[in-house]
Length: 178
Image 1: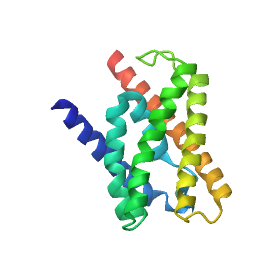
Image 2: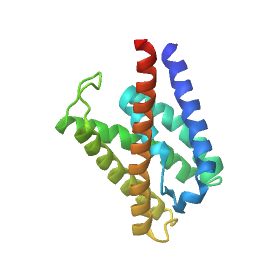
Image 3: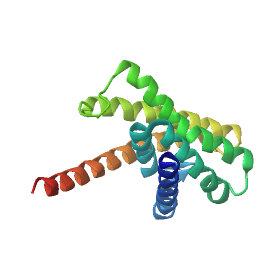
Image 4: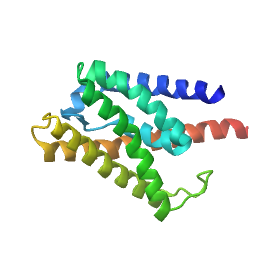
């Protein structure tokens, strides 16, 4: 039961974060599915890194209503496809990268170089798969531009989320040390 509760908490938190981010960053939305700064990409990477398949499942659950009711206005096939690819991309990326760039289960050896490889691989894969999906549904009027914006937005979102987590970790680490 605790896994189900954790799944629901992650899904609800991710959905709320995604909706707030959507409205807060509308001025950074330049192409179909592409924000210049996309914090949910960073959050997805962290969620899947920390909680694996459970986190990916929660992201899939949260992505469907967001895509169906907010992004693609009742486009069921596209919303279903996006809700499947969105969590699978970080899951597959992390699985493949870990084969070539291993890290400890407690993440103690995740250094800047490993995080850079993860971020670039994820952003490249995510932008490619998502923009190809939008192209299939005839939503991408400028696919190369959209890919570039999405890639940059994913990288910036990952960097911001990771630095925010680092700052939070330092603040709470200092409080524990007192």
